[in-house]
Structures are given as structure tokens and as C-alpha cells.
Length: 120
Image 1 (cartoon, helix red, strand yellow):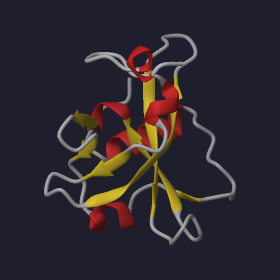
Image 2 (cartoon, helix red, strand yellow):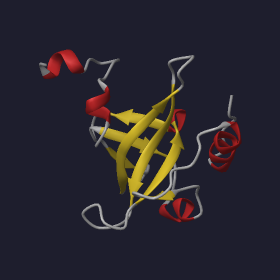
Image 3 (cartoon, helix red, strand yellow):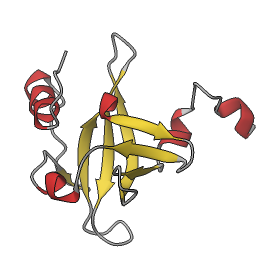
């Protein structure tokens, strides 16, 4: 598939989102989008699961972020999220290759509340 057909100024293909860099507002790279989670009924993305920490994928952890917390920055070719590295240290997360959380309502409320959003 041609790059131009997988991305426009408004739409991007899922395979182009995965692996995209995530930055804080100061321009520090926090991690990359490992995957995103979509609500089956509404079709809306709910989370971007960011990979953070470790070296070469070893020892990194996954941090679900509310999708609306991310803003795409065309200059950076990546997403910007208003989160510090210190905030991530206390954020809901799980080890790469470990037991993933159950993305139910309780977990959603926990993640969204941590970042100051309301889970719908």
C-alpha cells in the first residue's frame, strides 16, 4: 500500500500509529506507541499503549494513556502528551510480556482519572 493512501492530513492507518514516538511538551521523547485499543461498539480509540523505559525493548513497561491525551505534532512526526517522566513512574502500567490488565470499566476509570480525564 502506498504511503499516501495510508495517511492524510486527518486519517492515519493503524500500522503507521504503532511505533510512533511520544514526546512531552518540552520535546523529550517518552516512548513509542506500542498499540492502541479501540472500543468495539463505538469504533473510537480509547487508549494508546505507550512503551517506556528499558533498552532495546528489554525491561520496558507499557503505559495505557487516554487517547484524547495525545496530540499529533506534524513537526515531530509524533504524538505529544502533557505528562512528565515522574508522572509515568506512578501511572498504571504493566511489564512487557507480563500479565496485561483487563481493560474493563474499573481499569478505564483508574487510567483516565490518573491523567485527569473522565472515562465515558
